[in-house]
Length: 263
Image (cartoon, rainbow, N blue to C red; front, side):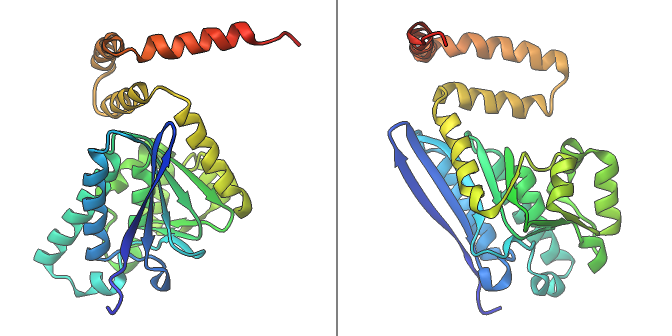
């Protein structure tokens, strides 16, 4: 393995806050994941987690051919039982670090999105892809099961589609992924950046504290009973008024409402 790849980070500073762009960069190998890329993801997410000005994150793969084709098969072939445990645990930590970021994370997908790449995308809050995208969980075809964040798929695409993908290793087109609910946006390549920016603009128009609180609530709802989720949300609603954000944003909304002219 001559090219371990890396994850490039760019912080875009805007008046309403910062947007981070993360690029998995190993295009000659379809952005296949290596220990270096995995550790980069963990370290960068740890850095972003404490960035109080952060409003959103966009995660993409370098080049035109792949989001990421998953874990590097040469690395997988070299593993034994102990090194396999270490590799898959660190990969889980990387995807978990993406999931735990306190702001919305958007996966921008082109080309191959296989295996761990599909799990990384599943760990994001929402996903946009162009028509070149191809999805698969092909682990069983190389003699291993799909694990770790593959467990997120049933909530996104249902148990039937999850079983179909994981038990056959078959590929799924971008259109099928959209129809299954894995993608929230499917568009032409030249529209992908525009659609991502539209989401970012919407996020930046919202209260930053409210968005962080909402993401935390959603994450907790995934793991809690309905009654516990409702009870917790009551306290988070009240906590929102510990800052001036509700009054400020409501005042702006009322002002805009009153200044709108009827058609």
